[in-house]
Image (cartoon, rainbow, N blue to C red; front, side, top):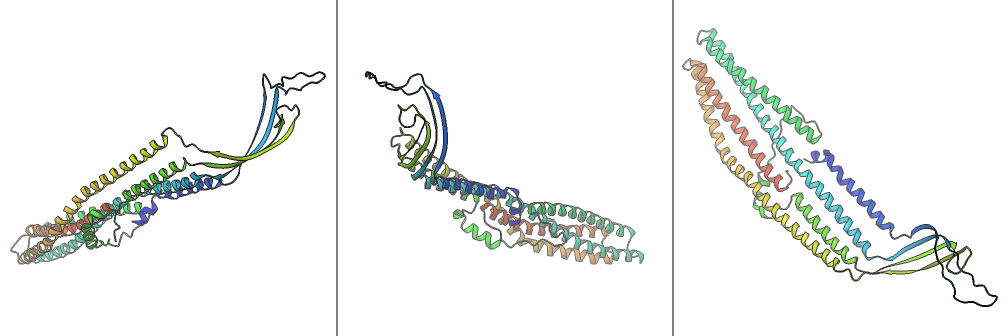
Length: 400
């Protein structure tokens, strides 16, 4: 299961989201440093200020109509209540994004479960058919001996040989289906399984029983983590909205060269500088902050509704698996008895075939009934393990 999740290309999105968030957090850290800028301007204005004073032999200069300014400025944030809140919101956004990726990857776990147990069912079918072939080959050898001794007809040999060929066809089909299932499983896990080794069914009885006993309290699905991450993001957004209503203080400085400088009546180019502290506060926002908080509260209600809907959906989804577990478990209690009875009938028919009392066709019918009983037992055994695995996977629990 972990191999399939690790091999999925979408898992890279988790690391990409973390890298993106780290870059944005570095940008927030950079806001603590002085922000530097440079600007320049040249303009011509139609009028300039004049001194309304006329003195004999005194000429009061008037500023030029064309002005020029080039300056560099620096600004340093001294108090910004939103910075910590924005960092918290960014981390919450990252957690929500990563939780969303994990939720999207969850469907892969269900696909792996289906592929594994499909291969396991074919594996069990292959083993049963192979054992049946060995038995039929022995019966065919006995029939050939009897025909040569005049104790049986050639049709008896033909009947057993035809049944043997049919079982070989079944085995070839099971082999092909098994290889296809293993190839699908290998594609999911990005690892080549051993096609010669039988697949071992996990013992999930205890895990399924524990999960069933605590069904109402299980919250292991990644969608629950995603919803919780959404709640955390909304909480951080509410904190950020509150922080934006608090005062912000910054220091600034500016140095430049132009005409005029800081003296508006000057007619020559001059250097200048200035500095100070700036306060920015918007206590009155015409209700926008309150509406934003109300929108966040409504979004929390949406999250709560989605969580309740998810819980009900999962409860409906596992009902089928629970019914399958109960049905197959009850059926399996009868399988061994059915197989034992069929084996007894097959042994008796085999003995009667050796005595020439029954035909090979009748023996082939009894052998087919025994094979069907054995295949049904194998199918039920795999189906029970598969139903338990689906039940655990639907709840989001790990398969031991």
